[in-house]
Amino acid sequence: MREYAFELALCAHREPQVDGLLARQLGASCHGTRVLDVVELAPGPRFDDRVSLCPGTIPAPVLESDVGPGTARDPREALDAHPDRLDDVVEAAVTAGYLERERRDGRDLVRATGRYPEGWAGRLRGIENKPDLGRPGDLERQLRTDVSLGLVDEVVLATASHVTGAHLNRIPDAVGVWRFDPETGGREVVREPTPLDADGPGVEPLAEHSGRTDIAVVTAAEKRRARRRLAERAFGKGWRPAAEVWPDCARVTVDERAGVGPLPDCPWKGRLVDPASECGPACGGHERGTAPAVDPEAARAAATAWDPDAGDRRRQTGLDSFGDTG
Ligand code: SF4
Image 1 (cartoon, rainbow, N blue to C red):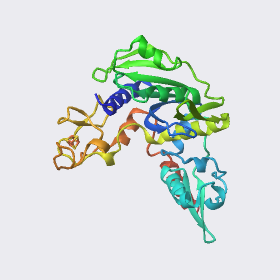
Image 2 (cartoon, protein in one colour):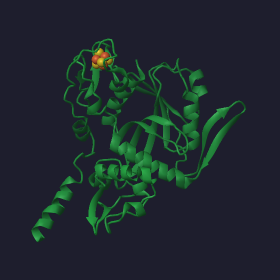
Image 3 (cartoon, helix red, strand yellow):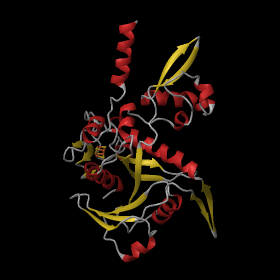
Image 4 (cartoon, rainbow, N blue to C red):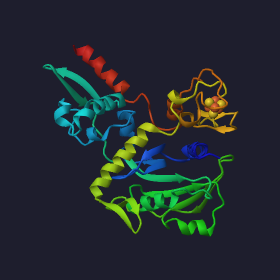
């Protein structure tokens, strides 16, 4: 079982069980490069307000600025972003549905489409997938980093392997362990996770040399900002492979996984595949064809509270009333 197929199967199993959202492959560090396989995001008190604000990820420089729904601002003055990145940041926030542009006195200004609901994100659970504990790779170091930094509220290791006492001894005590069967969807809790101090400061290991480890001390305020970035990425991204990456291969089939899909299944490989890294003309089984028409966003909307059209109706209503009075 490839890690990718294991990860999709786990997400498909978890999504109907959690009251919130799941996402895959998200950066989860303050100064390093740690990427969490899966993040489960529980709703906070204002989750519904975030859902109805806009569907996409709001870039951090926009959230950390004072651009709001009131006065339109010049992004060059309001955003703390490198000039080379400024246009991309604004474009990403417009595409996300959070900023709208307006032109006044020859200047390009931006304004938020609504008030940002701080506190919308609840607890964050990070899941590290390691289907085969016989090939642990960097697992110990990754989990030590997660526990030491404490960016998420809890960390779980998910594996298909039989978990022995020796395995448990090698990973930090705070890490929970699930044994998951991707074929049947059966999940056994081998060990519950211990909550991490996500509100306090943390220590982030950055690089290991013989006899010493470079670290960064991370303040509680830095972690708060990083948690919001992580929650925003999880909110906008989700876990299903995007429609654009599905291969133009005649062999790929659509696995609906009991209504949770669409997931790319390959009968030639006999499993779910990662289109981005496994598919294309270089694959031995590739047969030229047309990528199936799939709509992962519609599937996510049907399965969760996330709304891909959020904000459209509000903006449309605003335009209509402008027309009425105009
Ligand atoms: S490109 Fe290869 S891995 Fe991808 S669907 Fe086609 S045969 Fe399967």
